[in-house]
Length: 57
Image (cartoon, rainbow, N blue to C red):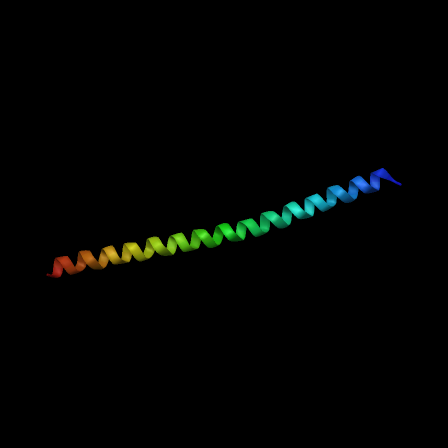
């Protein structure tokens, strides 16, 4: 057996696996961030509408 080829295959597999993990993890983080921003925007809009209605009344 050629140990250099085995180690090269293991290292390439680990690099590809790490890159795939980072890509998937980043996508999940972006989804959570977008959802959190949407919730904050809705809360701000509700607060703005409450302030406007209190000024009018």
